[in-house]
Length: 300
Image (cartoon, rainbow, N blue to C red; front, side, top):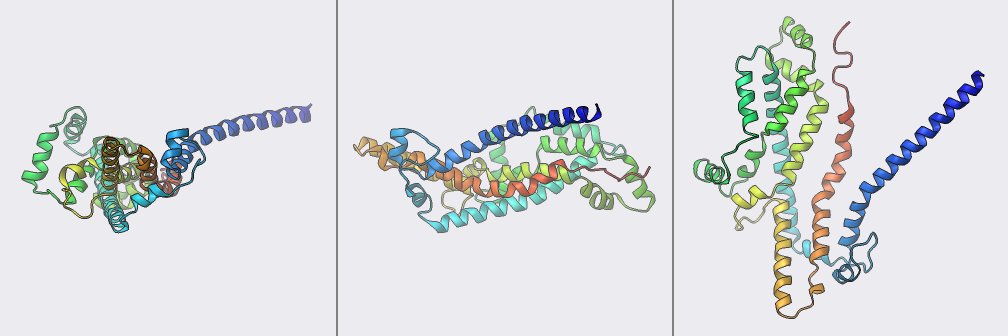
């Protein structure tokens, strides 16, 4: 009887695993197909896309879209360097400020925590608008044509501060109290205890900040003039697509076949150029999302 019961349990476990892995595999494949479609379309000729639509395998292989995007490699490399620098500096500084703010706002001995928390939450409901923001950056801070105009607005996010505040609340208060008894100051507690125990939250928030800087183009368009030689990658690629669209419209009025301007394949090529580094970087951050924060931190 026991052997029969064990066999039934083993069979049911195997069936559950097969169904679970099958479902996860189908879901993963459905997430992978759009990336395959983008890469395939970026290597397709414009005529094949217009005649047959997008496909998972190029009908007519062509690298013309990439040749146009990388027509001036120096500008592409310069845009990559600018975006990478803004992303690294902005993520490091923003992550430190967000973590410190979230930790301070959850401290019970911080007198004005509720008022400051309300002020931060209030900004998620109402804002001054575009005109005051533009005047603040250009007239008061004088950051026109300055990379700081792109860097500074992304350092703080009310949503990320609230997320960090909620996360640090889960850290047992006894840990900080024991550190204070041992003579540690508030900043020492934050650096040597809170930050190491907040690795999953820091990884998640850091990824949000990094993606925000990497995909940023709107502030760059507002505050960085076209006279600047190197501008962030997303704005550079946006200008490439806009120029191609303008050329196609001009060619259409001149009776030039639209397939001679690879607009659709260029859109896919710019998507590959913009998202490639992020896709390569993501697996190194993913492992921190499931890490515990207080395992073994409090003695019984």
